[in-house]
Length: 76
Image (spheres, rainbow, N blue to C red):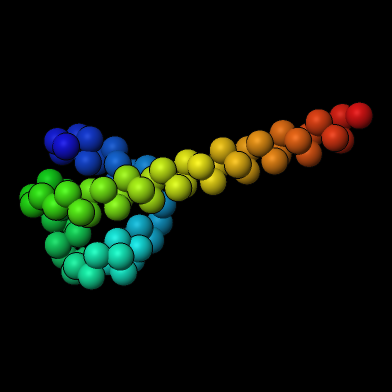
């Protein structure tokens, strides 16, 4: 990933993603920040960041579907 892609990834991740990555990988915040800024490389950190993003997107999709169902019920 280049710096632009990493910046976009950081912007899309939820608040507190560093804590989740630290707990899962047992790596320091400093190292996580260096990887997420492109100064260092860790496939483990990037994969976990993408996993967090995927879970967030699934949650948003689920919430959106539930909201649409509620709207459909109320329109009747």
